[in-house]
Image (cartoon, rainbow, N blue to C red; front, side):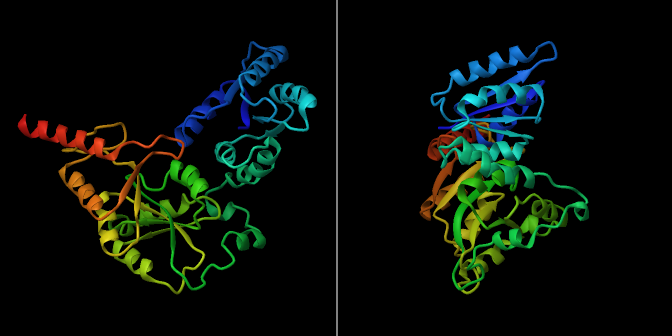
Length: 326
């Protein structure tokens, strides 16, 4: 695996490392190196060398630095000269670039290939509101955003179906999008479809090159049966509740596996782990989904280990039973 070193003036490297972990999960062979106000070039050089020494593969190292020409960059560049055939440096680090680097390590084993690949993502991550201030995308880029057979006869292909009370947020827009490569993100919810503000926010949160839609459940059922207009379209479905997912599946949306990301806590619910909360209706709904042949993939991000949904539901049921007796 390609090792990654994040280097910066001050605590920026530590902060963005923590942000990346929150979105993509903890990462192996990634180190943050900081230059403090009281330190000089030799200090950060020593830190860089020590960080590289911890990597399993020291031949393939990608350096992500904050500023071209600054002291962190200059010291990285000095070390780079002896390894320029395999190492790579990218400056102007932002969070979309870091997330893309994490995702790229899953399929690329060259620091130089990853460096070339993440540049576009770093640039695309810079957006402006109001939107009229944003430069217009080039025609070629817009054409490449959709597969060449988009709109051809065929049904939607489902690359992920997820229950997440937060719907479209950082973990979905970056991590899951990078690993499943959808052309469309579809929020399936009657409540959200009738909320203009939430609908607009979701559409604005879509990652570059992916269209976001919000549709009522019955509309999603109709779309799933349409075999004339969705050839080449890869859909990532987001449900706010298990009840919405059950209604869609029983209506004919062909989902065999549900990724369980988060279910927010509210009055009357129990919380058997950090991100999932249930009431009796939720537990009963998951029982119906299981009876319908649906399997559950309990993970916040792809890098997480899968949790046992049966054990989580049993713990939730036990806690609800205790509440009833109290």
